Image 1 (cartoon, rainbow, N blue to C red):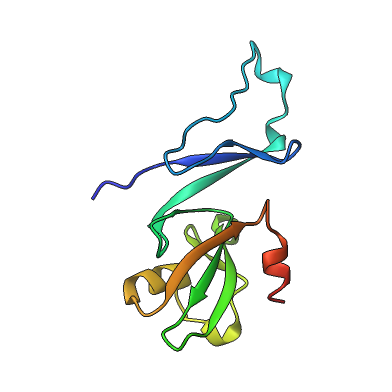
Image 2: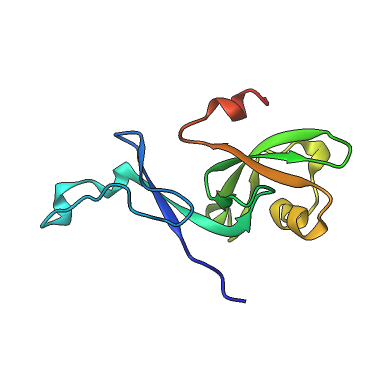
Length: 134
């Protein structure tokens, strides 16, 4: 199976997406003769995980998910790329200890089919979603 490679790009200075949407359309374009005209550290690239939430919405790195079990209990966690920790995979950060799987939580959720995930925001536009869970 071929995995779709898509990105969206967050501008941390203007606080808006330069590349957004389900199809990865470029909403705004920075055109310049030289890369010296802007600082690449002002931009955050968020990669598509290859997964879709319960509503068919693409899940990207930096998204905030609501994970709901069959019992109706839920928690909120963010999608992260864990390569800096020697773990090259997308997974959920800041999950409750009671929801620990001993393996990749995101993969376990999607393979098990017992819980559902819904994108409810992202860490850039909605940081309060994660704060409310602490």
